[in-house]
Length: 293
Image (tube, rainbow, N blue to C red; front, side):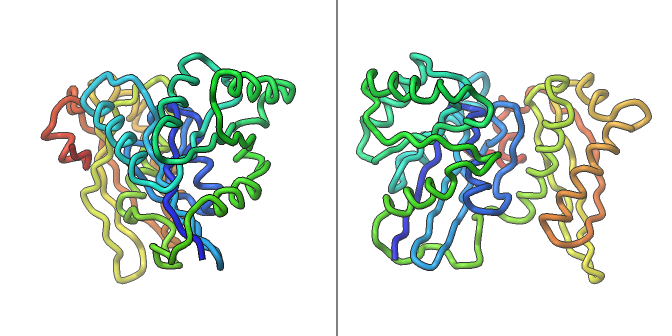
């Protein structure tokens, strides 16, 4: 039996969460085109008969602009130090920059072995792949590079087998039926945040938090979910609500359907939009919304 923790690291929006969801076969992390979608270190667990891979999905590396993003950076740094293997996820569609090489070298210089998952190969020119791999090796990136596409499932099986070979011998550390360390309550809040990021794009900046006030399963099997959508400005609230409440009704409907799929039960969802100015820089509010130092 082989078992180990794999830290999944890389720049914001490289496709880390999507890759983990595909590898695990369950939705354990939300995804959107926006950078910094993942704010916490989230574990996704893949258990097979002869190995168990525990993926630690981390916030993407992103220049700190407020207290929250600084906390996210520290979360990623801490998670990357306490694993058996590092999988650096790089967006191949974005090419290779000097900054990419610098960040890769930083983690290669540590004691934890690392490989690079070169992602999104389904949306790029195929001839760019060997050229980028050559550039990485010529610049001192001396580790295995595995081209993959999570969206098209290209080389996902090969990546799984590769990682299973890299983790150490050992017994399972997580029970067979567990696919994530996060609670249903947490995932419900994340699903709501994901749908907002997907619907509003650049209309509403990244300053959205979700506070779950009620999460209860009723006697009839229906989940009652009551939550607040927190934004930073009054005009953001207006955008989120929309004309005669149309926008919030639409995004809540999308979220409810995904919550029902995740929970395997009907959901009665109530949402409110509230303004908390500059909450990402206010320690008391960060704690209230679940972001601890």
